[in-house]
Length: 68
Length: 362
Image (cartoon, rainbow over all chains, first blue to last red):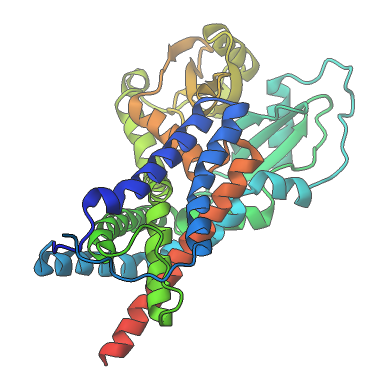
């Protein structure tokens, strides 16, 4: 890992949060009915929210400057 | 991560993906309509129907079975299931010399014995389901698809490992849309792959468990139900069977408060050669998917055992809804379908990335 590289938390933080939300949605909708069916679908939808945000956030991606 | 380590993981990711991609694409494409099986069959099989004699006494289960078998002389009964929203009993039977998996399915109006219209099992959906389940190859096809599922899991895990070196200088969600097509598709592949990782792993792992249904049930019969079957030497002839109606009533008494789901007749995968297996499910969202059979001795009609399912049968039962996504209403199904489409894009972009890399190398 060189000086300009991102750490594991920066790389896997957001994916880990999305994975946990997805799993809570998948299992929650299985364990309960009614509102949980909607909550489960909503939590799984966070996946697409993340994709939509990435698509709509048009930034010029460049390598970050080296840290001091 | 060292260059050599990255190379090893890249090799694992490339080959686990390439070997399985065609089959995974087939599974994603057939799985897409299967998510909406209930809705599609409601449209495809929509037919106005009312029971012939709603106020009458109705036929008991022995009479229903007799009616069904009289329409397919020589058949032996395999399963009997019960519609929840209409007085219809579904009888599944098969000719003794029929190929494996070939059954006759008859919905019967319990108020009259007349044939009732199908509400499930449209030929198109059945075709898609069988293609998805075993590619019309029976157990070898199921197990083969199970191996493809395992390769999917390997591909996902290796993809997550490789995500780190690819993203070490890019923030989460980076889509370099101004770059060349290959870079753009690499970013889409990485983004869709990492955000759907939990769902893909759950659907992949439960798919693998589902492909093991036949060996799981066979193991259950050979272990937990073995003592019950050992009491007899040979299967009872159909003419020696005790009343089915009374058998179901005994089973109900043994498992009060549960909902009757189906009866497996002797000799099927879900029972022994010597018992009616009367399956009930619970009424909570979770226990709806978990069945418990009461085994009734087919010769005497007496309760032989209530066989609480062992953990591996419960795992199989829970794997089915978690694989097909049909347990949380229409909203969940729509999200499931979108995730399935995302998986198709991941597979397609992976194939594209491999092809363009190969072309560049040559």
